[in-house]
View 1 (cartoon, rainbow, N blue to C red):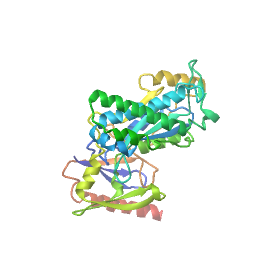
View 2: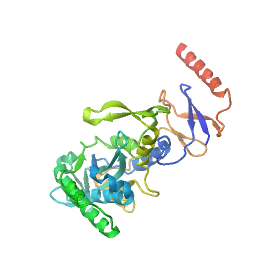
View 3: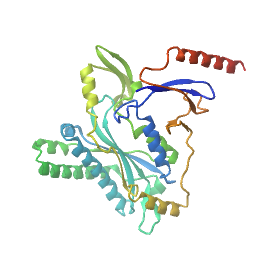
View 4: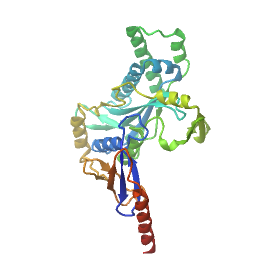
Amino acid sequence: MGGHIDRCGSCGHLQISYNSCRNRHCPKCQGNKREAWVRAREAELLPVRYFHVVFTLPDVLNPLCMAHPREMYDLLFQSAWSVIKSFSSDPSHLGAASGMFAVLHTWGQNLSLHPHLHCVVPAGGLLSNGRWKHARSQGKFLFPVEAMSPVFRARFVQGLRQIAREQQWKIKRDVFERLFSKPWVVFANQPFAGPEQVISYLGRYTHRVAISNNRIKSISDEGVSFLWKDYRKGERKLLMSLEAREFIRRFALHILPRGFVRIRHYGILASSVKKKMLERARKDLQVEILTRALDATATGNGKVLPPCPCCGKATMERLLEFDHRGPPAGLVSALEQAQNRTKTCTTNN
């Protein structure tokens, strides 16, 4: 699909990049989409704390997730928002209309099936009179996870029973017994320090796929070797080697159904009402719309170029675009020699 060569206008760093296949499951081709999505969300942030809440499905449900991914993941989204909405509207917890956006992840570090939602929830909500109400302790505490976990389990299982009846799924009786034998996991992280941290978080989680290229250390006839973190051993980094077919099988577990929406917005952050709701919140919080200049430039076709990965002082400049045959022979070596001469002159000066 061709590619392009970019150069830093400050330090002369050269970078060859290949054009995106635009597939959302590709580990290489999510950078531009991620940047565009983050920029679109920047103006929606409020000057309040934000919480990171994670809803995880137990591995007992993995066979159903593989057989019926669309229905199971839809139910995961619905159940998570139902819990946040209920606790937000309850006067004993908040008593205001809140919102959230949620990102579906289906993988663990070793590429096993591990469905969970990463949710960002503002520390507060809007009252019916348009006033903003902060969460407890001025936004330092959201809701007790000990109370959220059983509610999440009960609502998900209730929805699962209903779907199973309507679509005539054959689920063994012991599956439901096992679902109630262990507590479900709802994790609520400490609040973000401010909108800047939220933006940083968004960039890491919104368009992530099962594995990134930098984790893959070798590919051979014997298989694929990649790094993974073992959280049970203090996030120790280990090397895992899988036979090629097994690696492909695990990666394929995380290919979502066609048209499935993996990033969703709810409540006061829902697309249909967020403009009006955020205007009310800003008015009460007495703030202007947050605007940030993006430290990047655009090419002639509108694509955004990021800052230089070497010096970070300037944006990259597009030198050349090439087709599937690759860059012209000898051009890269000539450019690299010019780059080395530039660095030598800069050092001497």
